[in-house]
Amino acid sequence: MGPVARSEEPGRPPAGHIALRLPARAEYIGLCRTLAATVGEICRLDARTIVDLKLAVTEACGNAVRHAYRPDAAAGAPAARTPEMELECHVSGKRVAISVRDWGRGVDAAATAGDSRGAGLGFDLIHALTDDVTVTQGTGGVGTTVTFRSPPD
Image (cartoon, rainbow, N blue to C red):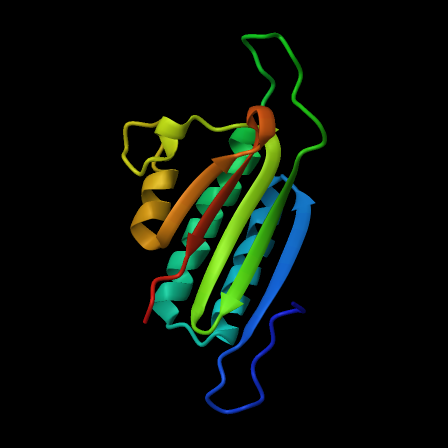
């Protein structure tokens, strides 16, 4: 599908896909938040849902920036590959599915379960603010994809 656009036909919900790949650096998290908010506005989501999506995107991107490409101190190895992250927004009607992907170190599944026993509260927030949260590791434990959807109306 092409880029997401507001439907010109009254009553017809928008549909589409947009992806943005950028350096996994803190200064790019705001751009990801802006993209998520814009897609939410195109879908005519309510203001509260847009704020929740922006916070969930902040947490998911923040995890990629802070954790995915850290050097493996235990193995004495440098960080893997050039740090990148990708934000994808899939739109179907008034629901937005967002994925944040990195190609760094995989994440421990226990830390993503949505309980605060992990190192931080990021995944707890994502679970609390959004629906259908999934966290998958790439092949061989390299890379992580966090996917979540806006709640239904």
